[in-house]
Image (cartoon, rainbow, N blue to C red; front, side, top):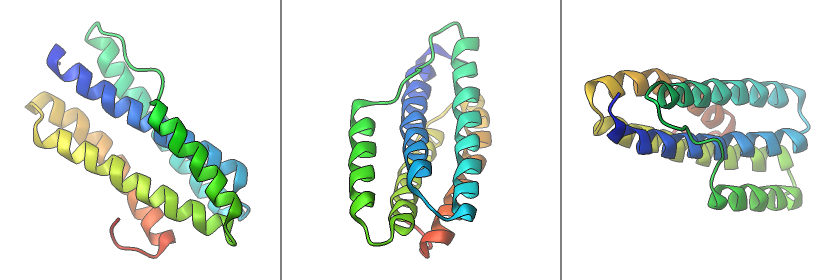
Length: 146
C-alpha cells in the first residue's frame, strides 16, 4: 500500500471510531432486546472494519489512527441528549444511526472512487460490511436511503 493512501485510511478509521462510539452510546439507552442485539452485531462489525483498516496502516509501517474526532464526540454526546428527550428513544437512536451510516458509507464510496487498485480491493471488503449495516439501519428506520 502506498504511503499516500495512509492519511485517507486514517480518516476512515477516525470516522469509523466515531460511529462505533455512537453505537456504544445507543446501546446504553435502547430498550428493545432485538434492537440491542442488532446494535451489538453492528458494533462488532465496526470493530472488525476498524481493526482491519488499522492493520493495513500498521503493515505499511505507519501509525494507524486510534481515536475518533472531536466533532464525532460532540455529535455523539448531542445524540445522546436528543434521544433522551425523545418520546420513543429507540426510534430516535435508529434514525440517528441510519443517518450516520449513510455518511460513513458515502465516505467509503468516495474513497473507493479515487483509490488505487490495491486500496480499492481493501476498501471493497469494508464497503460490503458497511452495506450490511446500512441495510439493517434503514430497514429499521423505514427509509430506503439516507
